[in-house]
Image (cartoon, rainbow, N blue to C red):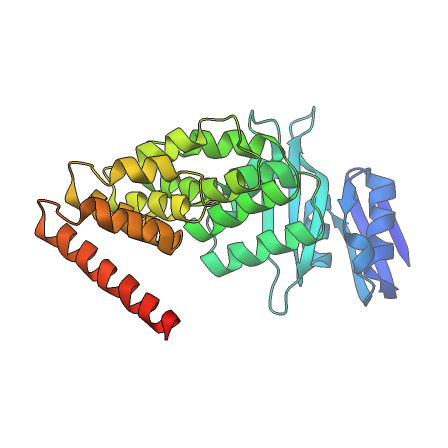
Length: 302
């Protein structure tokens, strides 16, 4: 195997040499940082001469997914400065080029390159980046909380939480008041989970959930009530009791359903409060609930 770097051009002659060894020699001679190449043990036979570093890497990594970070040299040429190996690809490689020098972090710039891919590919890439613990994974995950798809946003929030990044609580609280309804909904869907883990005690999370039960977006109202219903028995109960007398009958019905999810004791309490409600649908909901609870009681006593 022979690797030669001369006058900003690379030449490689290799006969069944491990790809990782070739990349190591390239890194040693060109000073480019290479991450993840130790997994590339397959033998490679290749010969080329006088190519730029970028052209050489594209030829060597024809069946590998990778991200390459580029930066302008003092003499004007754009040079690769860092290479991240993501994984194998059976057909042709995917190359993500990140130009450095922008005010955005490298993680943000890297994730911007993923945004043009379809949902399944983005999910696969995020999983691969998590598995190799990419050096900028925190910034990548924060960027993913702004993804257009709610599933990816949820994964990003949860991964930030599981990895112990304390600022995720503040991010969730902030996003729960976002003017973007989609981001607001995703954040609210996870507030209860973090509150239940004790990480949001002392914050205004409960106040946010309370406000969300009156959100203009029906889906967000449902999500807020769902979160309140899954908290520990007493948590959020005062909000649900207050909503049983809300002027909007739809919100009163949501409050009944949320209290019912907390257990029979709270379901009975809710039914009694609204049994004589001035709205027919609310009364019907209460009457049906009372009938169901009574039937359950009779079955238990048999």
